[in-house]
Amino acid sequence: MTGRARVFGDDINTDYIIASRRKRESLDPQVLRRYLFEEIDPHFAASVEAGDLIVAGSNFGCGSAMEVAVTAVLGAGIGAVVARSFSRTYYRNAVNNGLLPVVSDTSAIREGDGITIEREPELAVRIKRTGELVRAEPLPSIMWAIIDAGGLVSYFRKHGDFKQEQSR
Image (cartoon, rainbow, N blue to C red; front, side, top):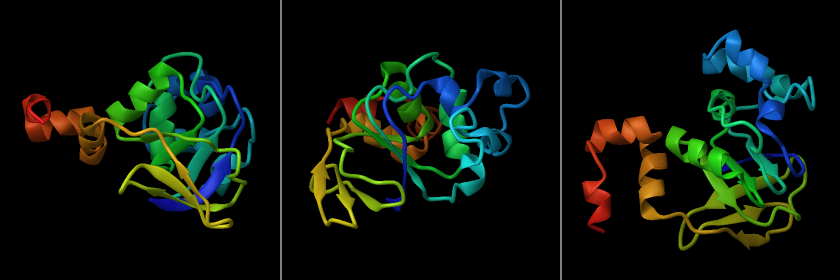
């Protein structure tokens, strides 16, 4: 996965990602994408291009457990978030909805950098500007299977249950 880095700092809570009042208006990802990060940067949503990647500091997705904070990111065509750490709930919501959460040092990544998330031989983030390859925390195979399927619901539609992954 390759894209342009859109950089944020630490403690980006779910209300910064998408204000909770917006989920009362619609749950449609194409509507929600218009309000992505509006509390931090009112012009951000209009500047997002499909394939952009969010890069953040520590504790990304803290705050409430609203799943719509992942839905809005996916609706904007963003397939991954690279952060130093995630709130547990956002991390699980990301996997369950097919958004790749990558835990990695993000200190060398700048706004607009071209970055590539490499899966093999190990999960890592390559920064085009510097050529640096930053290792990331590995994901268990079941999480890759869920993300590759497009989320937990799609995974269950395809596989029916976790038996196949448990036997690995």
